[in-house]
Length: 127
Image (cartoon, rainbow, N blue to C red; front, side, top):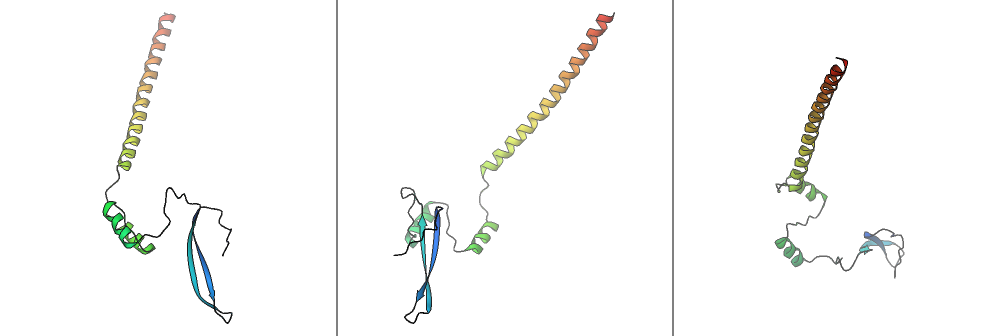
């Protein structure tokens, strides 16, 4: 039994265990992958079988990549759809800019009218 208590954060951990031969020398190493702090109701930490992976890929727009280079290549050559969220955000920013533009000119004209009315009122008082 192995107890390793330096896992305070939730996540996936890998433990490298050196194999010891009968002569006290280190042999090939064993790698153990384990999960700490997972919610069993939300996830199954067991590795996917090939059949599970094929089943998921047929039903969902999801792909499995083996290493970092495959991920970089997939990201740089992706011809995926553009998300609607980006267009909604651009539209929202344009609406805010338009509102600021209109407010600036409406308030400026209101101040101009106010100063004209004040000038006319002072002329009437002085005459």
